[in-house]
Image 1: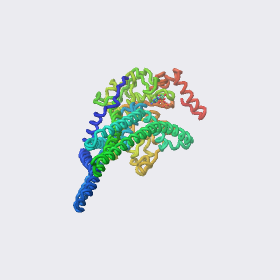
Image 2: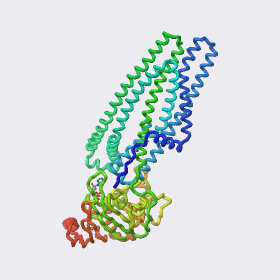
Image 3: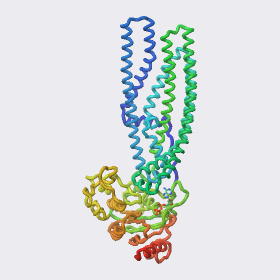
Image 4: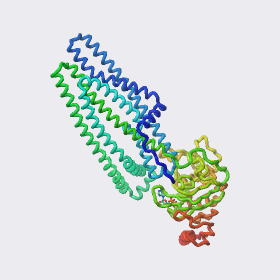
Length: 610
Ligand SMILES: Nc1ncnc2c1ncn2[C@@H]1O[C@H](COP(=O)(O)OP(=O)(O)OP(=O)(O)O)[C@@H](O)[C@H]1O
């Protein structure tokens, strides 16, 4: 499979364009808020350094108390007005960007993860990508991508403030500006180095987080609670969690140490910068005609100038962080599916069984050198009932995932009614297959919704009742007060029932039958059924698979005899194929395993399997 080189960074300007367009499309008023905030907040900054000069000059010039109160009162009221509206607008910018826009990215990212090819989302590389996408849209407003827009506004405000205050200090002495700027450039450079170092650990951090959070989520998972107690796994979980935590601690500690050193360097520069400025002003007071009002005004300007520079460095740093997050988000969102998402080949009829052909199919998992499916050739005739058997790890589930289009062959082809599965639109192709996988997936909604995936008002009742009956679930459901309207997962829905393992398996079968697709795939569908339910299912298998081609995976070889043909898989290859009688006559691996299983039955119950 040829690997496309993926773009991990779009560049700052491109990201800026992207974020501003997103903000514009999402909420235009955010731009008005930003404008008001910048203008008003800057004006407040000027008034704050100018007001003490006005007060001192007024006292020096001995103006009348009425004029003094009017002047100071007007300025103070104006200041309050501007401060209120600047705060209001700032909140407007933060609200629309961080609270709303971030939620928009968060949902889009989740949708992308749900929609992307399974082969990508389940690979190790895909998991890191997803973790980085989660971090990019996290609730932490200091690093998430939505902080890009407010930080741009803060940065613009700081730049304008810096230029204006420069003009004031320029009148005083240009060298002061030069000293202040050099000290800040040094600070910015060190900050940039620390930030770049932190970014270089992003993949390591995502990998540790993904391991740690997987473990933390699993231990909180209801299904895992029994095993934890039964196998006394607490100490193992504790040790493993601490192992990951230690890894995380070491990494964060290393990063934190660099931040601490950067902080020390900043304090050193601050002392040189501000201390030098004040010494210069005192000297000016002593040697020229500078008034106390001027001293206070310039004192404020130098402090304010330093503050603007600090703001520029800080906002630039935040913006760079947000820019990295935008890159991470776009890296995830740009993921190209390997399967076809555009209009594909014409689909075969849903009411006719499909023919399936595998030609020289090879497959390896991305992160492994091993070949899991090796040059596999197989033809499943339309309407045929094929059983796939083999030892654990032989590749049965992998083969099923390939046929389902969840994984893609590294080489070779999978043809459905003569058309390469790659030629179908991915979602169209999924619609041709109804599969029951080993891992069950129940959702917190009613039994009917879990079977049909339709809203309560939209499903086909007749079809629902038919599949409930075929899956042998009628008796269980009839016992419930609300029948198939009963909710599942009461711990989440607040009411309803918990089904047993066997009942869930029947429900999964009902779900596959309701889909009524031409290719039915059942991966160990009877593993949780009691012998009577299992026997019933085998006897009804013809009816269940009417007008369908079916693939049936099982470890119980006796259960595959109702299939037309059996393939025995070993190391990702078909080593034997034929009907039960043919394989028994062959005297190979199938017979060997069958004899071991039937021997067990004979010895323990006197029941012979043949
Ligand atoms: N995501 C993965 N990455 C790497 N290897 C994997 C992955 N999933 C499965 N494997 C490996 O592929 C091999 C085949 O697994 P598969 O699940 O297809 O076997 P199986 O025949 O269905 O086994 P079982 O009967 O136990 O369900 C196993 O060795 C397994 O470890």
